[in-house]
Structure formats: C-alpha cells, structure tokens
Image (cartoon, rainbow, N blue to C red; front, side, top):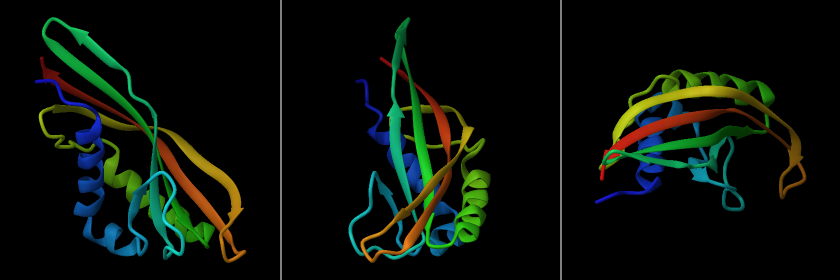
Length: 138
C-alpha cells in the first residue's frame, strides 16, 4: 500500500528532535508553517515547497522539497542554530514509515527579510531548502 509524504515530515521532525542540543535550544519547538501565537523564540518552522511523485516499475519515489527556517529575535542566534540544523539534516538518513530514505540534502540557503512579531519586535528567519528523496514499493 502506497504511503504519502506525511511520514517524510514525521521523519524530518524526528531527526531534529534526535539532536538533543539543537532541540533543547529551540524553546518554541518545531512547527509546520507558521507557529502558534505567543510562542517562545527561537523556534523552527518548515514549509513544504513541492512534493512530486514518480511511479515506475512497481515503485514510487517521492521527492519532497521543504524550506526550514530558524526564527529568532537575534540574527546571530538564528544563524548559529541553522548551522546545527544543516549539520543534522544535510546527508541524514531519515526513517519515514513505509519508505526507504534515499537522500536528504540541503540545496539552498534562505535568509528572509526581518519581520515584526505580535509584540512589535523584529524577528529573523535563517535556514535552508532541503530535498528529500524516498522510495517505496507499490
């Protein structure tokens, strides 16, 4: 039975949580899309970019492209935590349920323009785009 990209995102979050020092530094945790209001900084947010499926000869390859950023009130803190995030995910062997991890690579850096949070303070988002390839039998 074919599975969707949901298990890829679960594996991605598991990999971040498995790095104890990185996850402990993310006081606001890791969230898909925008975080809930009044969340503590720093935090991580991931946003799916594209998720094409390629079916061939009884197998499906899912190519998940996802942006992951560290959001902080300090650009230095965001950059340092992004370095740790990159070291954790670039080349990681993820474990999505029902799929075989083929590759996880950082393919792009992201430095978003500063934004203002609900308290009127500047926040910075620094991160990268990751391409995750998984395979499964159909």
